[in-house]
Length: 120
Image (cartoon, rainbow, N blue to C red):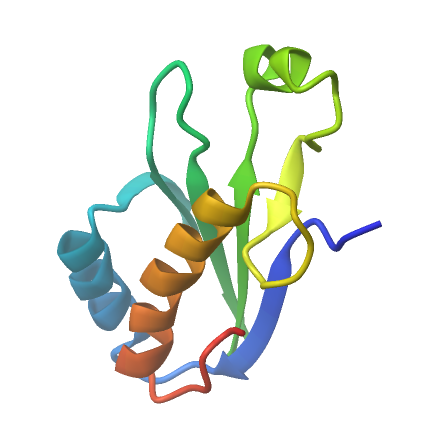
């Protein structure tokens, strides 16, 4: 079974949130929730669109990023539940190849801004 989310832990720079907001504006991600040092971003909405999501939590000078593609119930029904509710943006496998690639491309722009290795 594939991982549900791509998870990366990186040092939290002083301008982390500023760079993340810059990335969101650049890629079309919208912040859908933020509480203190935890935020969730999403891109893609619609009946047949698989939204790409990213969450970031900062604690003790470390940021943990989680990135995934979410599948709605209707899409999962059409796929006879072969498609999981969440799937990582990392490459590998034949499930949700296009939305995973799109999510990986967008999240890698953030990784570049933060000076971190890309997700493959």
